[in-house]
Image (cartoon, rainbow over all chains, first blue to last red; front, side):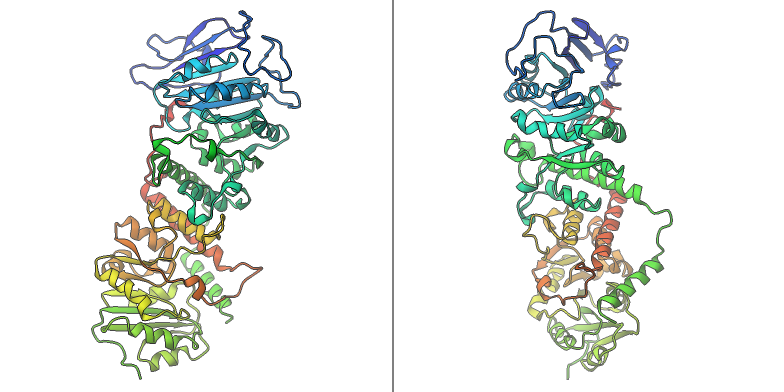
Amino acid sequence: MTISGTKAASGSGRRLSLGVSAVSRTRAVAGSRAASRPAAGKAKTAVRRSASSRQGRRSGAGKPAAGRKPGAGSPARPLPGLKGALSVIITARNEADTLPGLLKQVERLSPAEIIVVLNGCTDYSYERSRLCRKAIIVHCPESAGHDVGRALGAKLSRGDILLFLDGDMNMPASKLAPFAHAVDGGVDVALNDLDGLLPPFGLSDNVTRCKLYLNAVLDRQDLGASSLTAVPHALSRRALECIGCRELMVPPKAHALALMKGLRVEKAGAVNVIKHNRLRESNTGAGNAVEQLIAGDHAEALHEVLRQRQPAVPQSPAGQLEERRRLAAWRNRI
Amino acid sequence: MSPGNHPEPYVSVIIPAMNEAGTIAGVIAEARKVHPRCEVIVVVNGSTDKTADIATAMGAKVLLFRQALGHDVGRSVGAEAAIGEILLFTDGDLPVTAAQLRPFVAAISSGADVALNDYSGPVRSARPHPVVLSKHALNLLLGRSDLKGCTLTAVPHALSRGALDVLGSSILSKPPLAHAQAVMAGLQVQTAQHVPVGKLNAVRRKRRGIDPLQGIVVQDHLEALARVLEHRGPRAGFSDGTRRREMVR
């Protein structure tokens, strides 16, 4: 794994290794300050942050409307109208075609930082992402698995508002801004509202059904099928701390945790991800691998819900039976 | 006068009934026509009308309980008393014909263990009724999304004697749990016939527009799901893909 970024604040051309055993091939990201850990001899994982300002070079692309001066991108500088610092986390798998466009749009949000997690990319995603000088790029050549990149990106982030995106979406900044603004205005979890896109339930896919069910079990039918499973969404720093970075790799579980912890979870914008999602062999057709994975994720979420709900004194079978008896009588007006 | 129950029945038809004097005669008459070797068992509970008298007069085995047994408890009681090879469950207020019931028996005869009503509930709106959603979700997490919203919750349905031996009769009072158990035990669970019970069901009393039973049914599905997770693990047996969870702590 390589973390490469262009940051005015960081040392130029510094190449640091994370304490990772190349033998076991386990790659640990210890935290956002991981880069400062001492080098380990055989580590494959490296963090590289080169200064961009020293070159005074601008890509020209994605120049914010506000007309920021070259090199003025202090990581803490908030977007006008946005009180908190924005971290944009983009996860991508072989999205060389869409990443440059998305990064341009993201730059228009004047984020404090952009973290691109490249997960098992074999195309030019890395090279293309590097054209965005602001981006900190985490490059995992070997796939880390579904949504692990979100957790990784979150762990590395420093902003007050975390906006999560996928590299396969090509989305104007105006569609992304509402999520960041919602969190800036006090929402903890700002979700994409998918309900306008839902087909009749009889025709819906298993993923949608899982999402509807989880929200129903958590007594949030009002959220419909909106969930942390879908991007774009944004989290407050508080939400991240409450939920825990690690849990983000199983988004429905993070979603359930957010609701059970009483965080403010709301729909914040409506972006048609179904239209923009890239179709792959693994995510098309009934019973596809992604669908199976997401079903398992929802099982995990429900497992957590049931675990936390277990009553201190479970109702006795006799008590249950009596309740049922009385209800049956009531329904039949006896 | 009806012929009465066969001494060596192949099919046992189990009919829980609570004040169904108006419909019970028709239900028993259709049940009788399902198979030549048939026993009809009517579980009369909490009834103040002539349901038991009518059933007795028609030669059914009547199990009489002064108090209401509770939702679906009649199924367990009826199954306990049944001696047939195939157990067919219906309801005293459900006007279904013998032609609609026979496919359930036929499915079990051909090797199925559990023959379900091919009825998923109303699915036209984008957001379904909580019970409909619960049934779909349970099947989905059982890895049987092909069954859609069809579960042992809905009658009519039929069980093989073998299925009853595996499940036991008491679990039948909690149909979602029985359903989950049947699938997890590797029993052959399939749909047999579409009987639109939503249209046929009697309209019941509601509290503020919601049938209070809804809460119990939703809760029963969650309990069934808890059992699935207990048996198959927190991911219900679904793959974690290529996730390397150790990468983030």
